[in-house]
Length: 206
Image (tube, rainbow, N blue to C red; front, top):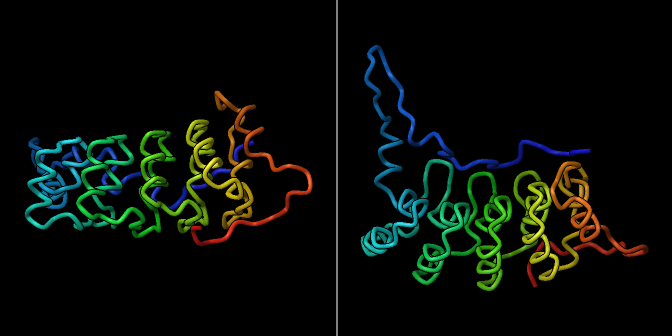
């Protein structure tokens, strides 16, 4: 049974809507200023893995820019699985654990989308795997909810005690594995805590 929830920042701030236009009294579509800002900004370059444009924008001082929902370029690059863009942004000095308005990190975005290589990169760069978003969920919760076995394996190998953390609804990653998940049995085996294992993870990285 699925114990889901809408979740803080369940989709990008602009999601798939940043390309959409709104017609106001005419047949021609007019992009909002917010949409235009997004397209011209570092977030669009990161989302599309446009590394030359990323370098230009970083050189112009836009590395730490946030969109209206608090997303950095790293959130967009991580969500869309762009390893080169993530490397570029991290090497330029963008913090690996920057959070959105909903408390979401790039690691959580990558885990939610099943981006194994990005999860591994962010963990290698010191990402805090026990960070919780506004729903109390960690990257492991998000990976489990999405049915992403590879990401779950990486996160559990990094910190096995992530399996103990409960979200705001008192759900552990195991509880979020969907019945129809392709790797359901493997996920549940991985995330099930051994008998007598009742420890709890710290809320700070080790």
